[in-house]
Amino acid sequence: MKPQKQTLKFQAEINQLLHLVTHSLYNNKEVFLRELISNASDALDKLRFSALSHNELYEDDSNLKIQIKVDKDNSTLSVIDNGIGMTRVEVIENLGMIAKSGTKEFLAKLTENKTAQDASLIGQFGVGFYSAFIVADKVIVKTRAADASSEEGVYWESTGAGDYIIENIKKPQRGTEIVLHIKKEDNEYLEGQRLRNVITKYSDHISWPILMEKSVSATTEIQEKEENIIEAVTEEVVNQATALWRLSKNDITDDQYKAFYKHVSHDFSEPLAWSHNHVEGKQHYISLFYIPSRAPYDLWHQDSQYGLKLYINRVFILEGANQFLPRYLRFVRGVIDSSDLPLNVSREFLQTSDLVSSIKKTSVKKILTLLEKMAENEKEKYAKFWEEFGLTLKEGLIEDYDNRDQLAKLLRFSTTCADTDDQETSLKDYLARKLEGQEEIYYVFGKNLETVRNVPHLEAFKEKGIEVIFLTDRIDEWLLSHLTEFEGKKLKSITSGDVNLDWVQGSENKEENDTTDESFSAFLSRIKETLKDKVKEVRISHRLTTFPACFVNDSLGSFYPYLLKNEEDSFGGIRPILEVNSKHPLIHKLKEEKDDGRFEELASILYDQAVLSEGKNLPNSAEYVKRVNSLLVDLIN
Image 1 (cartoon, rainbow, N blue to C red):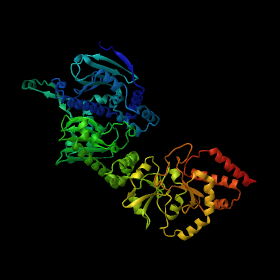
Image 2 (image 1 turned 120 degrees about the vertical axis):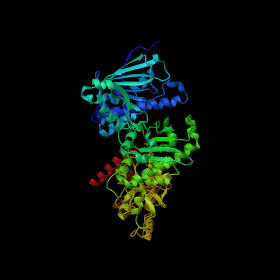
Image 3 (image 1 turned 90 degrees about the vertical axis):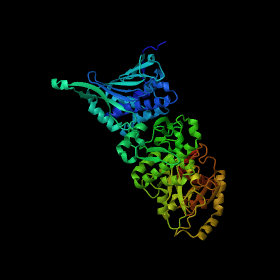
Image 4 (image 1 turned 60 degrees about the horizontal axis):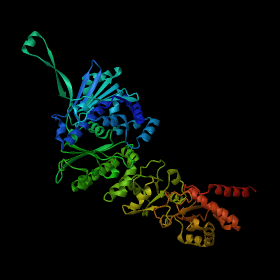
């Protein structure tokens, strides 16, 4: 039975998108045409790919094209393609709702923070269609899928006010026609020259012909004599209709590269950089990689889609071909066009093909080299990249053993050398500033910069002028399990129990330290006995100056358990080593304390303060407050 005419409500997220699109892009209205042409181009790509194995889909019409038509009398602008088309179900799914994971949460954030930069992310949802409402007060869609009968056309209509009309219609031609009823204030988009300028600006790279009507004066000798001119309407191709990536780099302008990026990525912002490569030899393929300026909204979703557009001899094959990139480069956008892969390539073939593996290996090198050049020559631009994608490169250092050295050079950190919170120091920068005789790269873990800037362990390093790297990202512990050295220098946690700074000129005499340790031996044993299983060991610290005590780790090495969370145990069940400052007045007072009960109270406060100085929570904060209050009462009395 033929489906009845229906009026359906937009999904709530669509209403949000319509509001964002029409308001955020108001000052850049002309992008609506770019988005509609881009969608039409995708529809033609999909038809040609499907027709490789089902030639009947062409329906005796293999001349694929995009048409732009203007009807000034009715104030309408139409974008027409004879591509893959849509079924009724697909129209509802594509124009009435969004199925991408995380969309609802992301849109809520955008709605709260309506900045121009955030607005630039809306294209990632594939919602270029809704940009039509920037200039139109009503939009009509007529479409038919390539494998459907002429009786299965679909009509869709909406004013963008919260609902839409959908019904089945008869449509002899496959493909999609989008009719925009242009607002009075935007009637400039009914002028042919204005539309040509927009197409040339944004869509010149589209590899399908974009046709517009052109009025040509046709005269005959008789007509000339009679001074009568007949207007014959013909169509002309407005764009170059050439696959941009196949052109020589010397023939492509920066503006053309940027326009193609927006087409291939559905991103409204410009890319940070790109790498265009023609590879010839044993393999023949072309790659064009882009580094976005903003992270996609689903960058950290496990099911996020990523990858390149795959073409084989200009024939579109696959969207999101992730077989050509490792997951940590999932932010990269672009195109791979191979001359060696078969047209009937399957995803299974791509996963096992040696050719694909070779292209992937080379592609990773190209992208990392591009980032290296950016880091070296365009530091401000790289700082922006690092802010958006730095964590994914850290993933890469863990996953990609072959490129570990190259990735290590791309890492950036905050350190004690700078007053800002910006992560701008490379490991190479660190080594250039190291002290004479320094054989290790020092770092400290913490849950945030405020915490690590104030950990007791930093005191000796600051005093001696030794730079320390701050690690505050959750991934950093795993990162340091794979990056143990850089250019021959081992990475060392300043919380490690075996840190030795005796090599620094002016350090304390080792014999003096040993004597101090011996004189405090009984006192240290007393604290250990008092704290029982809370600590593994108690010893004198040679790294503290103003703090009375701190924790260090022993066998954990770089795995100091900052990320181990346990409500009952601040250290996740791992017993730390407690180091005490033998020069601190509090330690001297505690050493002289004869009353066992008071000694236990003070030792417990010392332990709890060490926990707090690590930026951790006490398992029983009320007990700590009770102890401190008792101590204050004694002082007052």
